[in-house]
Length: 193
Image 1 (cartoon, rainbow, N blue to C red):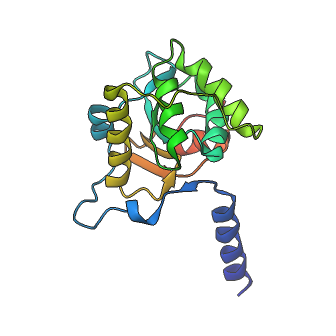
Image 2: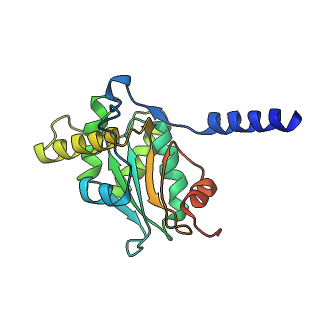
């Protein structure tokens, strides 16, 4: 009986430790529109920016909303893995109007990685992130809408939402919520540092 209580408490504690920003109920896909998350689908249909090991064949796709602090924590947790893995960060607009504007600013920046770092530091400091024009180029606005629809089609409940192939198993894995650096490395099947 003690083992069952311990297991129950461990699972509950693990679930509470996982941080994510949930999307509105109205954006949930119906059973008929939900599709399996895959690296191939994300690679061919989403628009994001790349950071990390540019020559790596191990690509990790992260759907994020600029107004989500959990996405900021995952950004920070991913940094130590940039030497091993290529990350493609895919902006979506689900929390508020600022999400799309900031996502567009980061996506079109000369150095998206540097602007994302600046943005996440500001967001996590409670300052709301970078300032961005609400006037978004039509093609970029459409790309962010398409990214958001793709996230919805996967049935993701929240952001950040990660899609990757586990390096050890070769299996496609997906995850709602932020992870620590160690948990992210384990999730991706990376060897410990």
